[in-house]
Amino acid sequence: MERLTVFDYPQTAHARRHGPFGYQHYASYRDWLRDEFSFRCVYCLMRELWGQRLAAFHIDHLVPQAHDATKAADYDNLVYVCASCNAVKGGAPVPDHPPHAPAVSR
Ligand SMILES: [Zn+2]
Image 1 (cartoon, helix red, strand yellow):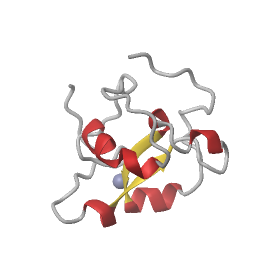
Image 2 (image 1 turned 60 degrees about the vertical axis):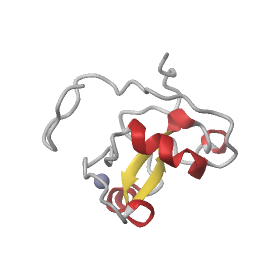
Image 3 (image 1 turned 90 degrees about the vertical axis):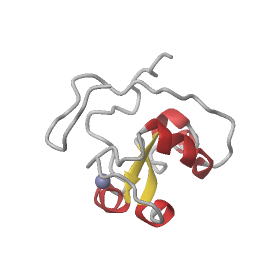
Image 4 (image 1 turned 30 degrees about the vertical axis):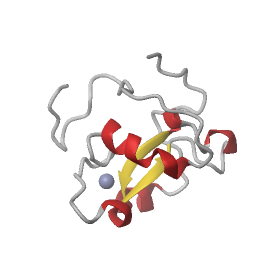
């Protein structure tokens, strides 16, 4: 894994290490996502601290639920984010994550 600072943008797309499926609600993927993204916000890289896990970090949908409800509990559509970044992003799609991008093969 390459070491990044908050000023670096990864040269390659994140390749998912996990591929859980079958949960009915996206919140069930929280612990998978925490490990997937090294306990950091994918946008600002802030690391979670003990005791702040549920309040300070959220699960964000790359393709917002309002745009495609079928991806609401799709693991590949979920990322782990801090509350501040999630509040700023809101329901906007991620600019470099087109809604019909091909799935990452494992
Ligand atoms: Zn953040």
